Image (cartoon, rainbow, N blue to C red; front, top):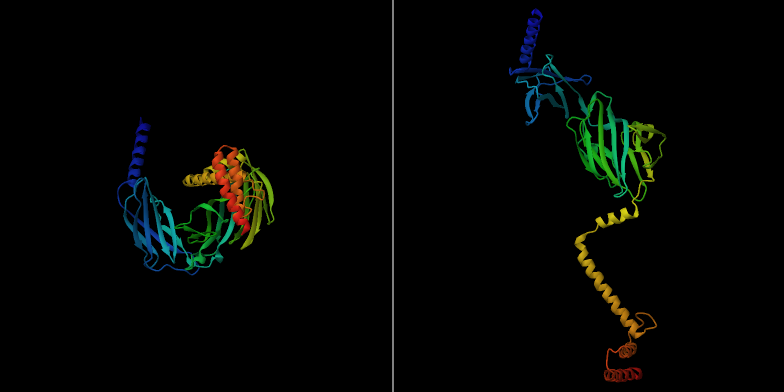
Length: 384
Protein backbone atom coordinates (compact mmCIF):
# COMPACT_ATOMS: atom_id res chain seq x y z
CA UNK A 1 0.00 0.00 0.00
CA UNK A 2 2.84 2.40 0.86
CA UNK A 3 4.48 1.55 -2.45
CA UNK A 4 1.27 2.40 -4.31
CA UNK A 5 1.00 5.78 -2.58
CA UNK A 6 4.65 6.45 -3.37
CA UNK A 7 4.13 5.74 -7.09
CA UNK A 8 1.05 7.99 -7.16
CA UNK A 9 3.03 10.83 -5.60
CA UNK A 10 5.83 10.42 -8.19
CA UNK A 11 3.27 10.36 -11.03
CA UNK A 12 1.58 13.53 -9.73
CA UNK A 13 4.93 15.27 -9.52
CA UNK A 14 5.75 14.32 -13.12
CA UNK A 15 2.37 15.53 -14.38
CA UNK A 16 2.80 18.82 -12.50
CA UNK A 17 6.28 19.25 -13.97
CA UNK A 18 5.01 18.39 -17.47
CA UNK A 19 2.24 20.95 -17.19
CA UNK A 20 4.67 23.60 -15.98
CA UNK A 21 7.00 23.14 -18.96
CA UNK A 22 4.24 22.86 -21.53
CA UNK A 23 1.64 25.08 -19.97
CA UNK A 24 0.39 28.35 -21.34
CA UNK A 25 2.73 30.48 -19.25
CA UNK A 26 4.68 32.86 -21.53
CA UNK A 27 8.41 32.19 -21.93
CA UNK A 28 11.34 34.55 -22.53
CA UNK A 29 13.76 33.30 -25.18
CA UNK A 30 17.27 34.65 -24.63
CA UNK A 31 19.87 34.30 -27.38
CA UNK A 32 23.04 35.67 -28.88
CA UNK A 33 24.59 36.08 -32.34
CA UNK A 34 28.23 35.00 -32.41
CA UNK A 35 30.57 36.12 -35.22
CA UNK A 36 32.86 33.14 -35.84
CA UNK A 37 35.10 34.91 -38.38
CA UNK A 38 38.50 35.72 -36.91
CA UNK A 39 38.37 39.25 -35.53
CA UNK A 40 34.67 39.61 -36.33
CA UNK A 41 32.06 41.21 -34.09
CA UNK A 42 28.30 41.76 -33.98
CA UNK A 43 27.02 45.34 -34.08
CA UNK A 44 23.85 46.44 -32.34
CA UNK A 45 20.63 46.50 -34.34
CA UNK A 46 21.03 43.29 -36.39
CA UNK A 47 17.55 41.90 -37.13
CA UNK A 48 16.76 38.47 -35.68
CA UNK A 49 13.52 36.53 -36.36
CA UNK A 50 11.75 33.96 -34.19
CA UNK A 51 9.76 31.45 -36.27
CA UNK A 52 7.00 29.03 -35.31
CA UNK A 53 5.25 26.49 -37.51
CA UNK A 54 2.21 24.65 -36.20
CA UNK A 55 0.71 21.68 -38.01
CA UNK A 56 -2.36 22.77 -39.95
CA UNK A 57 -1.76 26.49 -39.38
CA UNK A 58 0.09 29.25 -41.22
CA UNK A 59 3.67 29.87 -40.03
CA UNK A 60 4.32 32.90 -37.87
CA UNK A 61 7.28 35.15 -37.12
CA UNK A 62 8.33 37.66 -34.43
CA UNK A 63 11.24 40.08 -34.88
CA UNK A 64 13.83 41.46 -32.51
CA UNK A 65 17.25 43.16 -32.80
CA UNK A 66 20.63 42.57 -31.20
CA UNK A 67 22.11 44.64 -28.40
CA UNK A 68 25.71 45.86 -28.38
CA UNK A 69 26.98 42.48 -27.18
CA UNK A 70 25.05 40.59 -29.87
CA UNK A 71 22.36 39.34 -27.49
CA UNK A 72 18.62 39.38 -28.26
CA UNK A 73 15.38 38.60 -26.46
CA UNK A 74 11.93 37.32 -27.46
CA UNK A 75 9.34 37.77 -24.71
CA UNK A 76 5.89 36.25 -24.21
CA UNK A 77 6.44 33.05 -26.21
CA UNK A 78 3.82 30.36 -25.53
CA UNK A 79 5.02 26.78 -25.94
CA UNK A 80 2.94 24.13 -27.77
CA UNK A 81 3.87 20.48 -28.24
CA UNK A 82 2.79 20.38 -31.90
CA UNK A 83 4.76 23.44 -32.96
CA UNK A 84 8.29 23.77 -34.38
CA UNK A 85 10.41 26.76 -33.33
CA UNK A 86 13.47 28.34 -34.87
CA UNK A 87 15.46 31.53 -35.21
CA UNK A 88 17.07 33.18 -38.20
CA UNK A 89 19.17 36.23 -38.97
CA UNK A 90 20.52 37.98 -42.06
CA UNK A 91 24.07 39.12 -41.46
CA UNK A 92 26.45 40.62 -44.03
CA UNK A 93 24.21 39.49 -46.90
CA UNK A 94 23.87 35.86 -45.80
CA UNK A 95 20.97 34.03 -44.17
CA UNK A 96 21.49 31.87 -41.06
CA UNK A 97 18.86 29.72 -39.37
CA UNK A 98 18.47 26.88 -36.85
CA UNK A 99 15.69 24.98 -35.10
CA UNK A 100 15.57 25.41 -31.33
CA UNK A 101 14.19 23.48 -28.35
CA UNK A 102 12.18 25.72 -26.02
CA UNK A 103 12.49 23.18 -23.20
CA UNK A 104 16.20 23.95 -22.90
CA UNK A 105 17.17 26.48 -20.26
CA UNK A 106 20.44 27.70 -21.87
CA UNK A 107 20.46 30.77 -24.14
CA UNK A 108 20.13 30.17 -27.88
CA UNK A 109 23.33 30.73 -29.85
CA UNK A 110 23.41 31.39 -33.61
CA UNK A 111 26.80 31.50 -35.35
CA UNK A 112 27.31 33.95 -38.22
CA UNK A 113 30.30 34.90 -40.37
CA UNK A 114 31.68 37.74 -42.42
CA UNK A 115 31.03 37.30 -46.15
CA UNK A 116 32.95 36.97 -49.41
CA UNK A 117 31.69 37.07 -53.00
CA UNK A 118 34.58 34.94 -54.31
CA UNK A 119 33.55 31.37 -55.20
CA UNK A 120 37.18 30.33 -54.79
CA UNK A 121 36.26 29.39 -51.21
CA UNK A 122 33.71 26.85 -52.53
CA UNK A 123 34.88 23.36 -53.53
CA UNK A 124 33.30 20.06 -54.50
CA UNK A 125 33.71 17.09 -52.17
CA UNK A 126 31.78 13.90 -52.97
CA UNK A 127 29.89 13.79 -56.30
CA UNK A 128 27.62 11.17 -57.81
CA UNK A 129 25.86 10.73 -61.15
CA UNK A 130 23.06 8.15 -61.16
CA UNK A 131 21.84 7.06 -64.59
CA UNK A 132 18.46 6.07 -63.20
CA UNK A 133 16.52 4.92 -66.26
CA UNK A 134 16.56 4.83 -70.06
CA UNK A 135 13.10 4.73 -71.67
CA UNK A 136 13.39 2.78 -74.92
CA UNK A 137 10.08 4.10 -76.26
CA UNK A 138 10.48 7.84 -75.65
CA UNK A 139 14.31 7.61 -75.73
CA UNK A 140 14.75 9.81 -72.68
CA UNK A 141 17.48 9.24 -70.13
CA UNK A 142 16.67 10.08 -66.49
CA UNK A 143 19.65 11.35 -64.47
CA UNK A 144 20.13 12.31 -60.84
CA UNK A 145 23.25 14.17 -59.71
CA UNK A 146 24.43 14.82 -56.17
CA UNK A 147 27.35 16.86 -54.93
CA UNK A 148 28.58 17.97 -51.52
CA UNK A 149 29.89 21.53 -51.56
CA UNK A 150 32.45 22.49 -48.95
CA UNK A 151 33.61 25.79 -47.51
CA UNK A 152 36.65 25.31 -45.29
CA UNK A 153 37.25 28.98 -44.52
CA UNK A 154 35.82 31.18 -41.77
CA UNK A 155 33.92 33.28 -44.33
CA UNK A 156 30.50 32.76 -45.90
CA UNK A 157 30.21 32.79 -49.69
CA UNK A 158 27.47 35.16 -50.91
CA UNK A 159 26.43 35.70 -54.57
CA UNK A 160 27.86 38.75 -56.29
CA UNK A 161 25.86 41.38 -58.13
CA UNK A 162 26.45 39.90 -61.62
CA UNK A 163 24.68 36.82 -63.05
CA UNK A 164 28.00 35.03 -63.52
CA UNK A 165 28.78 35.49 -59.81
CA UNK A 166 26.24 32.81 -58.83
CA UNK A 167 27.06 29.18 -58.05
CA UNK A 168 26.62 27.52 -61.45
CA UNK A 169 26.19 23.91 -62.55
CA UNK A 170 26.11 22.59 -66.12
CA UNK A 171 23.50 20.33 -67.75
CA UNK A 172 23.52 18.44 -71.06
CA UNK A 173 21.99 20.15 -74.09
CA UNK A 174 18.25 19.48 -74.22
CA UNK A 175 17.88 18.76 -70.50
CA UNK A 176 14.35 19.28 -69.20
CA UNK A 177 12.22 18.62 -66.12
CA UNK A 178 14.91 20.01 -63.80
CA UNK A 179 14.24 19.69 -60.05
CA UNK A 180 16.76 21.04 -57.51
CA UNK A 181 16.82 20.19 -53.80
CA UNK A 182 19.19 21.41 -51.09
CA UNK A 183 19.20 21.95 -47.37
CA UNK A 184 20.96 25.32 -47.62
CA UNK A 185 18.99 27.98 -45.74
CA UNK A 186 17.17 30.45 -48.00
CA UNK A 187 18.41 28.78 -51.19
CA UNK A 188 16.71 29.25 -54.56
CA UNK A 189 17.69 28.41 -58.14
CA UNK A 190 17.04 29.39 -61.73
CA UNK A 191 17.61 27.48 -64.98
CA UNK A 192 19.78 29.03 -67.67
CA UNK A 193 20.70 27.94 -71.22
CA UNK A 194 23.31 25.33 -70.37
CA UNK A 195 22.52 24.56 -66.73
CA UNK A 196 21.24 26.26 -63.61
CA UNK A 197 22.44 28.76 -61.01
CA UNK A 198 22.06 28.32 -57.26
CA UNK A 199 21.01 31.52 -55.51
CA UNK A 200 22.29 30.86 -52.00
CA UNK A 201 24.88 31.84 -49.45
CA UNK A 202 27.27 29.10 -48.37
CA UNK A 203 28.58 29.29 -44.79
CA UNK A 204 31.58 27.24 -43.62
CA UNK A 205 30.94 23.50 -43.58
CA UNK A 206 29.52 20.92 -45.97
CA UNK A 207 26.29 21.36 -47.87
CA UNK A 208 24.47 18.76 -50.01
CA UNK A 209 22.95 19.58 -53.38
CA UNK A 210 20.82 17.19 -55.45
CA UNK A 211 19.21 17.75 -58.84
CA UNK A 212 17.33 15.54 -61.28
CA UNK A 213 16.50 15.99 -64.96
CA UNK A 214 15.94 14.02 -68.15
CA UNK A 215 17.62 14.35 -71.51
CA UNK A 216 16.80 12.90 -74.97
CA UNK A 217 19.15 10.47 -76.69
CA UNK A 218 19.23 9.25 -80.27
CA UNK A 219 19.59 5.66 -81.37
CA UNK A 220 21.55 3.78 -78.73
CA UNK A 221 24.12 6.36 -77.63
CA UNK A 222 24.44 9.61 -75.72
CA UNK A 223 27.47 11.87 -75.19
CA UNK A 224 28.20 15.17 -73.49
CA UNK A 225 31.02 17.10 -71.86
CA UNK A 226 30.62 17.96 -68.19
CA UNK A 227 32.63 20.75 -66.56
CA UNK A 228 33.47 20.35 -62.86
CA UNK A 229 33.49 24.05 -62.04
CA UNK A 230 34.30 23.44 -58.36
CA UNK A 231 36.13 20.14 -58.81
CA UNK A 232 35.39 16.98 -56.83
CA UNK A 233 37.52 14.93 -54.48
CA UNK A 234 35.66 11.77 -55.50
CA UNK A 235 33.17 10.83 -58.21
CA UNK A 236 30.79 7.91 -58.65
CA UNK A 237 28.88 7.18 -61.86
CA UNK A 238 26.21 4.53 -61.23
CA UNK A 239 23.90 2.70 -63.67
CA UNK A 240 21.77 -0.46 -63.46
CA UNK A 241 23.86 -3.34 -64.73
CA UNK A 242 23.30 -3.98 -68.43
CA UNK A 243 21.48 -0.71 -69.10
CA UNK A 244 24.42 0.95 -70.87
CA UNK A 245 28.18 0.93 -71.33
CA UNK A 246 29.90 3.91 -69.66
CA UNK A 247 33.03 5.45 -71.14
CA UNK A 248 34.89 8.56 -70.01
CA UNK A 249 38.28 10.19 -70.48
CA UNK A 250 39.20 10.35 -66.77
CA UNK A 251 41.07 7.70 -64.80
CA UNK A 252 38.62 5.35 -63.11
CA UNK A 253 37.95 1.94 -61.68
CA UNK A 254 34.75 0.05 -62.33
CA UNK A 255 33.07 -2.57 -60.19
CA UNK A 256 29.69 -4.18 -59.67
CA UNK A 257 27.72 -3.25 -56.56
CA UNK A 258 24.76 -5.21 -55.19
CA UNK A 259 22.05 -3.00 -53.67
CA UNK A 260 18.88 -4.66 -52.40
CA UNK A 261 19.35 -7.65 -54.73
CA UNK A 262 19.89 -5.36 -57.74
CA UNK A 263 23.27 -5.11 -59.46
CA UNK A 264 24.75 -1.77 -60.52
CA UNK A 265 27.82 -0.85 -62.54
CA UNK A 266 29.80 1.68 -60.50
CA UNK A 267 32.55 3.80 -62.03
CA UNK A 268 34.76 5.48 -59.41
CA UNK A 269 37.33 8.24 -59.80
CA UNK A 270 39.19 10.63 -57.49
CA UNK A 271 40.91 13.98 -57.69
CA UNK A 272 38.92 15.94 -60.28
CA UNK A 273 40.61 19.29 -60.28
CA UNK A 274 38.74 22.58 -60.39
CA UNK A 275 37.49 23.38 -63.92
CA UNK A 276 38.06 19.83 -65.19
CA UNK A 277 36.14 19.01 -68.40
CA UNK A 278 35.06 15.37 -68.51
CA UNK A 279 33.58 13.59 -71.54
CA UNK A 280 30.86 11.07 -70.79
CA UNK A 281 29.91 8.59 -73.52
CA UNK A 282 27.07 6.12 -73.10
CA UNK A 283 26.59 3.33 -75.65
CA UNK A 284 24.22 0.37 -76.04
CA UNK A 285 21.30 2.31 -74.60
CA UNK A 286 17.95 0.58 -75.19
CA UNK A 287 16.22 1.56 -78.42
CA UNK A 288 12.61 1.11 -79.50
CA UNK A 289 11.37 -1.91 -81.45
CA UNK A 290 9.61 -1.41 -84.80
CA UNK A 291 6.18 -1.62 -83.17
CA UNK A 292 7.21 0.83 -80.42
CA UNK A 293 8.52 3.29 -83.04
CA UNK A 294 5.27 3.02 -84.99
CA UNK A 295 3.18 3.67 -81.87
CA UNK A 296 5.39 6.61 -80.87
CA UNK A 297 5.13 8.18 -84.31
CA UNK A 298 1.38 7.62 -84.33
CA UNK A 299 1.06 9.40 -80.99
CA UNK A 300 3.08 12.33 -82.30
CA UNK A 301 0.69 12.98 -85.21
CA UNK A 302 -0.96 16.42 -85.18
CA UNK A 303 -4.51 15.39 -85.88
CA UNK A 304 -5.60 18.92 -86.78
CA UNK A 305 -3.62 18.47 -90.02
CA UNK A 306 -5.17 15.10 -90.94
CA UNK A 307 -8.11 16.64 -92.89
CA UNK A 308 -6.13 19.04 -95.12
CA UNK A 309 -3.39 16.48 -95.75
CA UNK A 310 -5.92 13.78 -96.66
CA UNK A 311 -7.67 16.15 -99.10
CA UNK A 312 -4.33 17.01 -100.72
CA UNK A 313 -3.48 13.31 -101.13
CA UNK A 314 -6.89 12.60 -102.73
CA UNK A 315 -6.55 15.51 -105.18
CA UNK A 316 -2.98 14.55 -106.03
CA UNK A 317 -4.01 10.93 -106.65
CA UNK A 318 -6.86 12.07 -108.92
CA UNK A 319 -4.51 14.31 -110.89
CA UNK A 320 -1.92 11.55 -111.32
CA UNK A 321 -4.64 9.12 -112.43
CA UNK A 322 -6.03 11.62 -114.94
CA UNK A 323 -2.62 12.36 -116.41
CA UNK A 324 -1.74 8.67 -116.66
CA UNK A 325 -5.00 7.92 -118.46
CA UNK A 326 -4.40 10.78 -120.91
CA UNK A 327 -0.85 9.58 -121.59
CA UNK A 328 -2.12 6.04 -122.11
CA UNK A 329 -4.65 7.22 -124.67
CA UNK A 330 -2.22 9.48 -126.48
CA UNK A 331 0.59 6.88 -126.52
CA UNK A 332 3.34 9.39 -126.11
CA UNK A 333 6.65 7.57 -126.68
CA UNK A 334 8.90 10.33 -125.36
CA UNK A 335 7.61 10.53 -121.81
CA UNK A 336 4.99 12.54 -120.01
CA UNK A 337 5.90 15.99 -121.26
CA UNK A 338 7.70 15.56 -124.59
CA UNK A 339 6.77 19.01 -125.88
CA UNK A 340 4.11 21.64 -126.16
CA UNK A 341 4.20 22.63 -129.86
CA UNK A 342 0.76 22.84 -131.56
CA UNK A 343 1.60 20.05 -134.02
CA UNK A 344 2.37 17.67 -131.13
CA UNK A 345 -0.83 18.66 -129.35
CA UNK A 346 -2.96 17.98 -132.48
CA UNK A 347 -1.27 14.62 -133.02
CA UNK A 348 -2.02 13.71 -129.40
CA UNK A 349 -5.65 14.69 -129.88
CA UNK A 350 -5.94 12.47 -133.01
CA UNK A 351 -4.50 9.50 -131.09
CA UNK A 352 -6.91 10.12 -128.26
CA UNK A 353 -9.82 10.42 -130.73
CA UNK A 354 -8.98 7.01 -132.26
CA UNK A 355 -8.84 5.42 -128.81
CA UNK A 356 -12.24 6.86 -127.87
CA UNK A 357 -13.74 5.40 -131.05
CA UNK A 358 -12.34 1.93 -130.34
CA UNK A 359 -13.62 2.02 -126.78
CA UNK A 360 -17.07 3.16 -127.91
CA UNK A 361 -16.93 6.52 -126.17
CA UNK A 362 -17.98 8.43 -129.34
CA UNK A 363 -20.01 7.56 -132.43
CA UNK A 364 -18.55 6.91 -135.88
CA UNK A 365 -20.03 10.14 -137.30
CA UNK A 366 -18.68 12.21 -134.38
CA UNK A 367 -15.29 10.59 -134.83
CA UNK A 368 -15.22 11.38 -138.56
CA UNK A 369 -16.30 15.01 -137.99
CA UNK A 370 -13.65 15.68 -135.35
CA UNK A 371 -10.93 13.85 -137.28
CA UNK A 372 -11.56 15.94 -140.38
CA UNK A 373 -11.24 19.15 -138.37
CA UNK A 374 -7.99 18.00 -136.70
CA UNK A 375 -6.45 16.87 -140.00
CA UNK A 376 -7.19 20.22 -141.67
CA UNK A 377 -5.63 22.04 -138.73
CA UNK A 378 -2.62 19.74 -138.71
CA UNK A 379 -2.12 20.31 -142.46
CA UNK A 380 -2.29 24.05 -141.96
CA UNK A 381 0.25 23.98 -139.10
CA UNK A 382 2.61 21.75 -141.09
CA UNK A 383 2.59 24.11 -144.10
CA UNK A 384 3.39 27.06 -141.79
